[in-house]
Structures are given as structure tokens and as C-alpha cells.
Image 1 (tube, rainbow, N blue to C red):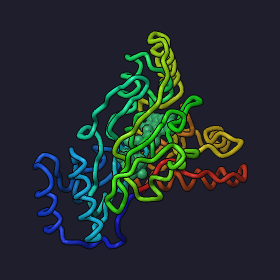
Image 2: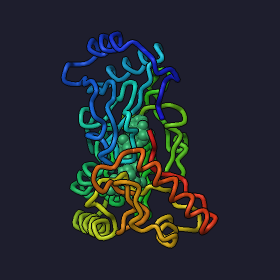
Image 3: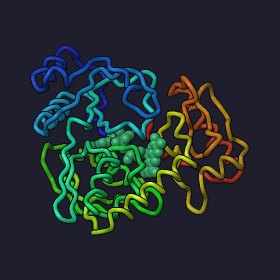
Image 4: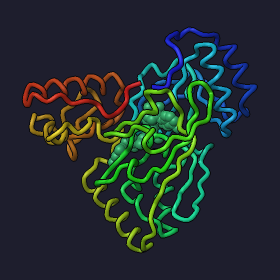
Length: 310
Ligand SMILES: Cc1cc2nc3c(=O)[nH]c(=O)nc-3n(C[C@H](O)[C@H](O)[C@H](O)COP(=O)(O)OP(=O)(O)OC[C@H]3O[C@@H](n4cnc5c(N)ncnc54)[C@H](O)[C@@H]3O)c2cc1C
């Protein structure tokens, strides 16, 4: 979590004044329900919800928050998050459509952190560039995908990233090479070091446009067939434990369709907890704990969450 300080008491008037000096009016919202910005459709209001459209604005907001111990959190497309019902007491900074430039130069795709993976994959395909097909159906931004080292169908971000430009907690711009990004299964060094992804350079290869589109279509079909896309969720709830599949362990523990209120273990794919109607974060949390306990009792395997609880 990119959070600047422990204190959750701060002067809202002061924060409002400073943010409104930094940002245009339309980029600053107050008490914005976070359920509108997460794919789980769960989450109470954020005190402040900001969408900077320039790096300088972002840097000023972060510097102010850090200096005055105002908590802040970085949000992409909210597709890997379960946000608390109480919401967020601080400044939620969304890096999404307002920071989403993309260019292609030869085999390189260079894009802002707010670009959606689907958009980047489609642009690459249009240019006959292969390597990103695996990511075309992951509903996150490039920023979120770098933080999570997002992956699917045998590919991961670490396979295509050349470098990433970040804003450090000290307010410096740094370009990190693949080695410096510390990628491993569903993680990177970004979060641990409190950095913010600003832009990403991917190295792809020349391919056949038609083949690339065909592969993407095949992967899309597989997702629709296997994943409960008809319900809001945050994707796979748990990381894959070594030597097992989380979904199978959960199913074999007799938990298919098991519910805590409206939070439900998907009947289609037990590795997903879905929001069956009006689930709360408290229900999701309780269901996660019950699933972890039951799977541990049955198989002695601890399931670690992949989704982030805020
Ligand atoms: C239906 C569905 C299917 C999914 N399938 C897959 C899959 O196949 N593979 C997979 O890996 N994931 C999958 N996911 C999970 C999710 O889409 C990925 O983890 C994605 O990379 C998250 O991106 P995001 O922009 O939504 O990040 P968010 O959920 O908004 O944030 C995730 C984390 O990244 C941080 N963050 C976001 N942007 C930045 C930034 N610019 N700088 C610093 N920190 C940032 C946040 O603070 C948070 O800690 C799926 C989710 C859903 C709902």
C-alpha cells in the first residue's frame, strides 16, 4: 500500500485548499464512493478522490501528503482490490484515463501507467507486435500490472517489460531496468518501496497481425468459458500455492457456491470470490477467512490472498 503516514487525523479544510490549488476542479472529488471505481463494486467513500492529468500535479500531491502525514493510496482500475465499507480516510489518487498516452516506436510500446492492458494489447496487435496477447483480457492498467507482475496463460509482465519510470517517495524520477523491478510471482519492488509507476516501456517482437488477433480471441473465449465474468469480482482471490491450484483446493473442500451474505465462492470457478449482489467488504473478508480455514483443515495448505484489502 502506498500510504504516507500512520496518522488518520488531518485537516480536511487544509487538504481541500491545497488540492484545489494543484488540480483543475473536475479532477478533485470529495466523498466519492469507491465502489464506483473497483471491479468488485465494493468500497465506501474516499475523503478525497483525485485524478491528476500531469506528472507535476501528481508529484505535488504526493509531496504535500508526505510532508503533512496525510494518507494517500494509488488506484489504477481497481481490479485487484477489496476496499473497506468505511472507505478511505485520505487522498485516493487514481492513475487511469487522465494519464494514458501510448506510442509505438519500432518494437517498443511506450505508455503511461493509466493505459489499460486491453488497449495496449490491441494497439500492439494492430501494429503486428506480438508478446502481449496474454495480457489482453486482464482488466487492469499498466501501472497496476507492473505492481502485480500480472500474468496469464503462461505470460507475465516481466517477460515484456524493458524499463519503468517511477516517482520515488522522495519525489525523484527514476527509470528502473527489468532487473531493478524485482519481479516475482504477482509482485514487484514497486509497492514495498512506495514508488509510483508513471510510464512503462515494453519490448515486443514482430509477428503476424492476423495470428495475434486470433490468439487474443482464443484467450478471450477461454476467459468467458472459465471465469465468472457475469459477476463483479477482483479476479483470482488467492495466489496459486506451490504444487496446487487454489480453485481446486476450494472446490474439493466442499465450498463451491459457499456464501457469507452476498460474497460467494463462484460456482463456475472456485478460485474467484464474487459479489453476488450487494456484498460488503466485511462479508468478503469473512468469506476469505472461512475459505482459508477450511482449506487448511482439509489439505494443510495456507491460501494467501492475491487481492489487496484496503
Ligand atoms: C475478471 C478479472 C480477471 C483477472 N484476471 C487476471 C489475470 O489473468 N492475471 C492477473 O495477474 N490478474 C488478473 N486480475 C487482477 C487485476 O486485473 C490485475 O492485478 C491488474 O494488474 C490490476 O491492475 P489495476 O490497474 O486494476 O490495479 P488496482 O487494482 O487499481 O491496484 C492494484 C495495486 O497496484 C497499485 N497501483 C495501481 N496503479 C499504480 C501505479 N500507477 N503506481 C503504483 N502503484 C499502483 C495499487 O496501489 C494496488 O496496490 C483479474 C481481475 C479481474 C476482475
